[in-house]
Amino acid sequence: MMTGTLVYAASADKGKALFESPTLGGGTTGKSCNTCHDSGKGLGSDLFERKQFTFMNMDKKTLADVINICIERPMGGKAIDPQGEEMQDVMAYMKTLTAKPAPKKARKQIEGC
Ligand code: HEC
Image (tube, rainbow, N blue to C red; front, top):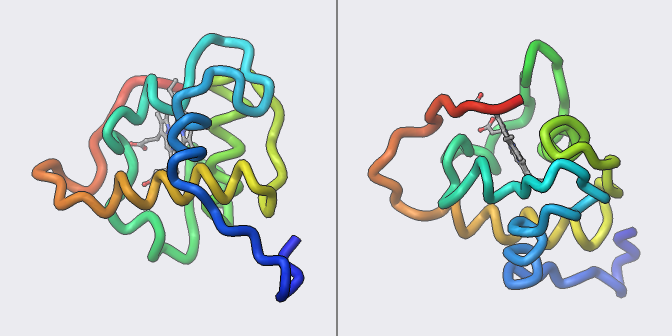
């Protein structure tokens, strides 16, 4: 939890390892975020500006909710703490992906869940 004095400094390096780990959230399908979102594929470049997400016909409010759906469904894991260090690290890494001046457009349709 954010407690003012003890703000966790998210690490994009740790986030990269988590992003590439098939066991994030106890995943059971052998897939990692990176399997589907290699180099930020399928991740909108406006990911961190959007206030609200509609995803797979579900209205999800936060980016953490969407990430947890990807952990639960295609990865067969359990949702991780939306405020936790792993989530913050993964997001820090995802920021480096979406920040790239990608030649590709905002969102590419990809196969998956
Ligand atoms: C089996 C493939 C698969 C895996 C594994 C997967 N995702 Fe996804 N993810 C998708 C698909 C499909 C979408 C919807 C993309 C679209 O609509 O074009 C998506 C969408 C998203 C979005 C919303 C993107 C946007 O711009 O709205 C985020 C954020 C996301 N995934 C993060 C993650 C993270 C973090 C992980 C790992 C914990 C992960 N995903 C694992 C397939 C996957």
